[in-house]
Length: 349
Ligand SMILES: [Zn+2]
Image 1 (cartoon, helix red, strand yellow):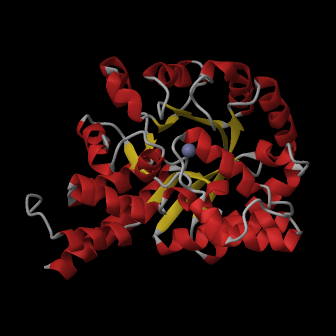
Image 2 (cartoon, helix red, strand yellow):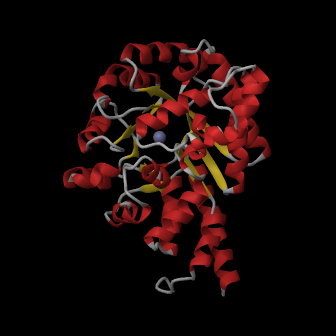
Image 3 (cartoon, protein in one colour):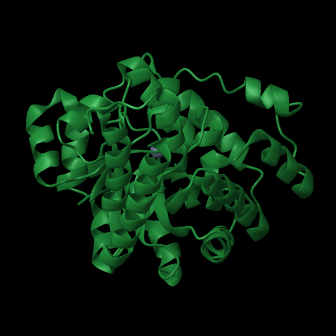
């Protein structure tokens, strides 16, 4: 039965319909050019682009830094609580269409507080959308506060202080932005502080940076999940540890190609990482900028690497295992996946 390989269109139908969790999505990276222009108009912000088309045309990045430059320009239209709500709500509507049942959203408060937007405006707008997604879309979502690693640790510590009155609104901290030259150990104190408060810990590591950054994300920051981590295959000892401790990797295939981490999807090491026994998940990273939301990542990666139905089930299962959720919730997600798979088998028979 498992050796029978369904036709590609059948696998595509499975990928689209299966319940899944998304664990690596920067909410500011879900801002579509249309929404950027709508918010700019609403807030009277002048953009350095004439129209939606010229903004889209500027998305021809060559590396992480050239992407980040446009990313921060796009975020400049976000000023009010409603803006943050509307941005997250637009993502949740897409997430629903892709059958995401659980989402953990990264947000970058420093991108906004450094422009004079209060921390409370950012988190209250996002949280309103998160709560609404639970009520109206049956998507359970959480927020993870990310520190910008190109800024100082003192700036990160100040952000954590601003976040203290809002600890009931987010579940963890992460580390994002320009990786190379900004190793995890630069943020040892702020992550120790976050752990002491009881926050969950993730970190971007091994996207463009070396395996050493993954080691220090684990050992110095106490990361429970590694965002990206695709450079781990350069270090067999590290792979051994990630497998042994079941430390998940939140992999973002379309992002990796857009930022030239891999030449094309056919060269991506996702299948290799799965074969090695790692808890790999597929995610969209910054979907408005990188050419697709989570289902597009699944569809394109499966086509390029000729992956099978068991990969799809495993990736969905991994996404639930890697989620920050109670065992009861995870069991319920897996039951939904099993029910979907059984119904799929029946309809295919
Ligand atoms: Zn990311």
